[in-house]
Image 1: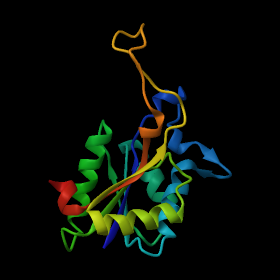
Image 2 (image 1 turned 60 degrees about the vertical axis):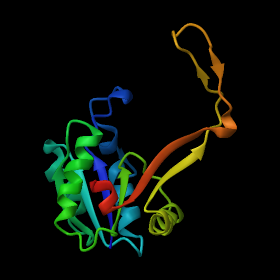
Image 3 (image 1 turned 120 degrees about the vertical axis):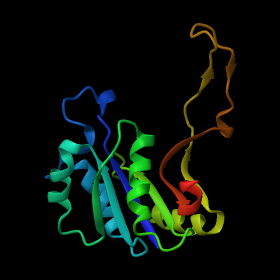
Image 4 (image 1 turned 90 degrees about the horizontal axis):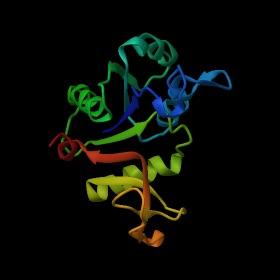
Length: 174
């Protein structure tokens, strides 16, 4: 079984907007729905759990009521870690095997491709835990005092983590 856990409980503070970014409407639908639909449309995803803030639970349920793979919309937590934990507790009710995969995805990353989802499933089965990354293209420095450059890091060795992040349920639960 492959279950997507979509995290939609963030406040979007970096965007400096009253509305959390995952609920900004683009082309007549909220941003989070693009992520949910990507997993809904993947042939290997069996179920979807969405973690959101309490005030948006009914909104999310309304937007996803016709999506057959969405099995739960739950209250997330005050942090990403707390939202993942709440999602895992909900997923545990549906898990058949500790080797079942959980794909954790940030709802504000709407451009996740079917290839990325497929590779997460394939590599998750092979390794038990995988992360989606892209090579860093910016020059990144290290500064210990916020004033002086201590080191210019070798960007050929640096990657930026994205989502989904995929785990066997037994591994992420522990």
